[in-house]
Image (cartoon, rainbow, N blue to C red; front, side, top):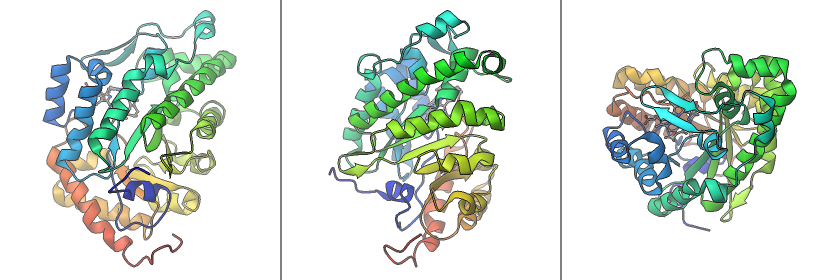
Length: 362
Ligand code: CP3
């Protein structure tokens, strides 16, 4: 088994005893860090940054040099899969992602194939191995993918959307076509995450960022079953350790019981949910990751500390909590406020773990 100096994050995901609540931050390597912007400028654009294993390694490590975080996350994007499927991906500066050839007709859907990660996503697995070497066992590395429904949103809308009218039009008019896209994409996600695990990812997270835009019935038909199939298809362990799985349905607070049965070790929570209530609902089945409002970082170091103590107290004593934001950190966040958050979580959380006798049920 490869040496891992800080396994607090992996232990918390498996609800094993820990000394403090571990944390990492969604989009921890991103535009709020001046050193990230400098590296992206050297790369030319965001996609070239993702496609260079050297530069992806460099930016993955940047937040870890500043803050004592408990996990690293692969620097990449969920849209690498639609790109590898040949749909044509661009990130126009300040505009977000654009897909050149969105899936709008039956012929395009029938032609869709799951890419072979060894051929068209090699730059991602190369980055994973290179980041693992650079981390040298300091902390675990998280791999990730978008969920089939979230990827389908971009593949059908052709970019971000306020109303999702193309995908929802297909969902209601031609559910068979949407299911076909989701089938192919589910296979792509399984192959992609297993390739990341084979290359060295020590935990994996599935971002179901747009699952929360669905109706109750549609979520249970078009997102949840595919999330469950992914969990079933993932490599369970590598290097002698369990590879924990996290699923994050943004806006999924109403469906935590369903999500807790989907085969994942942990559920990501957005900030709309009370984490103590979530724990009472599902905490005997899964760990919880979250759930500070990213905008809380626009307060002061004192107000950030108050918010951290509120979330820690709401979760309560014992393991099974990975602290995080409820969504990505905003590009306008002052980096020193991220530092205040990290410090507060580490300092204040010890009281929630200390009198846990080792090995006691949590
Ligand atoms: O967390 C991390 O530090 C790892 C890196 C990461 C990025 N994207 C880098 C990124 C991760 C995990 C993602 C996931 C991702 N990408 C999601 C799921 C999470 C979520 O936010 O709900 C989604 C929906 C995407 C698609 C995407 N990528 C969008 C909509 C955008 C534009 C919006 C924005 O924030 O600019 C991106 C671009 C992107 N992905 C950036 C970063 C650092 C900013 C690009 C830049 O540097 O200009």
